[in-house]
Length: 154
Image 1 (cartoon, rainbow, N blue to C red):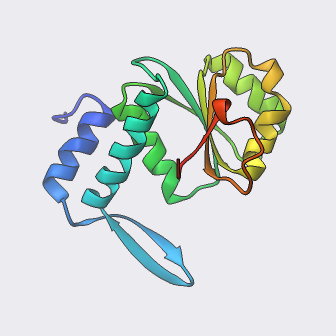
Image 2: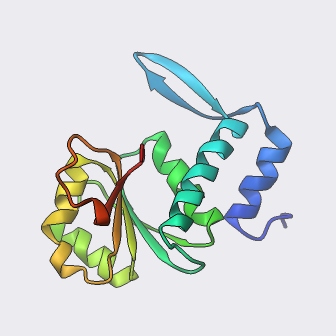
C-alpha cells in the first residue's frame, strides 16, 4: 500500500522527497546527462500550465506521438498533473492508425514530437473532428495554421 493514489500525487511527493536527485538520464553526444526531480518538476509545470491555457480540463484526453525520449515523460506527467488522461500513440503508427487512437480516445489535444509526426496527424486531421489543437515539440517551419498548433517554444 502506497501513500499516493494518483500518478500526479506520486510525482509531486517524490519531487519533494528527492529534489536534486536524478529523475532520469539522457544521452548527449555519447555522454549520459542527468535531469533532477526539481528540473523535471519545473518542465512539467510549464507544460501543464500550457495545456491548461489551451483549455485542457479534468478528464480530457491528450494524445501523444513520440519516440522514447525525456520530453515524452515530461508531457505524460504534465497531462497527469493537469488531471487529464494520457493517450499514447506509437511513433511507428500509420496516419490511419493515429486517427483511430485519437477518435477512439476522444482526444481534444495531441502532442507531436516533431515535424514528421505532425505531418502524419495533418494527413488525417479532417477525420478527427474533436481534435482542437496539436502541440509540436520541434517544428521546422511555421507554415501549419497557427490557430491549431503550438510549438513547445511558443
